[in-house]
Amino acid sequence: MRPIQPSPVAEWLSQREGLWRVYSPSYSLPQNEAARFNLQQADGVNPMQIADVSRYMQQATGVRCKGYSVTVPCFDDDVNKANINAAPNAKLLGDLNVRYIVSEFDLRGDGFVKRDQIGSTRIYENVFDAGRVRGGKIISWSPNRIVIAPDGADNVETTLQVVVETTLQVVVETTPQVVVETTPQVVVETTRRVVLSEIWYPGWAAWVDGIPVEVERDGIFRVVTISPSAREIIFEFRPMSVYIGAALSFLGLLIIIFLFIRHASRNTHHVSRITHHA
Image (cartoon, rainbow, N blue to C red; front, side, top):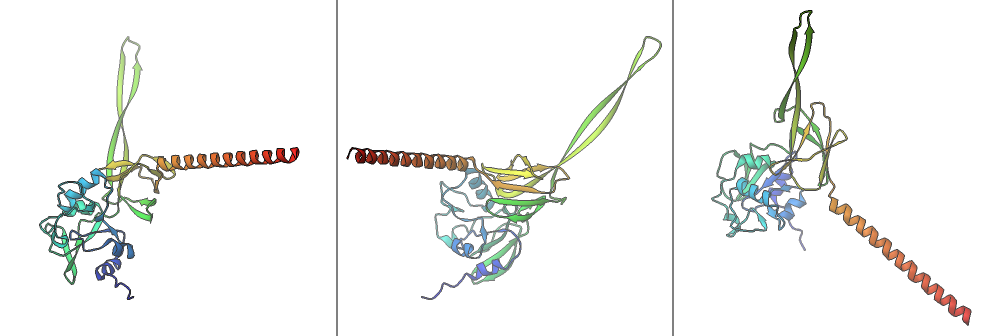
């Protein structure tokens, strides 16, 4: 049996540096080929879709769904030409860290630069790719744990909080008159929002410099608010359901062991009584 030849498109993509996603409106990159080259896709077969993500992808891909679909984007026509009239939104795809688009037809819409063509497959680069993190850089990445180093880049969303404190000075003169002087003092506190281009989902926890913080939402993405002095952000997937399931499994194991020991003890006692009477 001859080995299956790798996809030349997947090979081309695998030679590109960085952390990014690829999208294909014409389903030109099979999921098995993407997995073979460790490519992260924004499209493909996914029977379990979050409603917010499905709506976002419809806007980003320009492909409207008539109902439930197991694919992203959805289709009900010839695979290679199903979405030929769709106009992808480069900005929304870029926020999802989609850097490359591979298609069997010319793309409609702005923000896409054609980089190559292999056979009938066009390869485009999205000039609006915002990266995996807005306001930092990835130090390490895995499906369950992500470490980020914040930075002061322009794409950090900054919230300026101004707190006005008033100092009261009371001057009492010899005459029965009280003069109250107020001196306003302005205290400026700056916070930054770091946006991670990963889907928000219950069970994710975050720490900033070892201190637990809330995982906020920015649309479908995860966000944390940090101070200017923050040095490290860690996201970890710690769903409560897993811990509850593990606890119940452990409890079940203890019950089984208890019943086994109890049953064995009864059998031993029964055999001992028979031997004694004999």
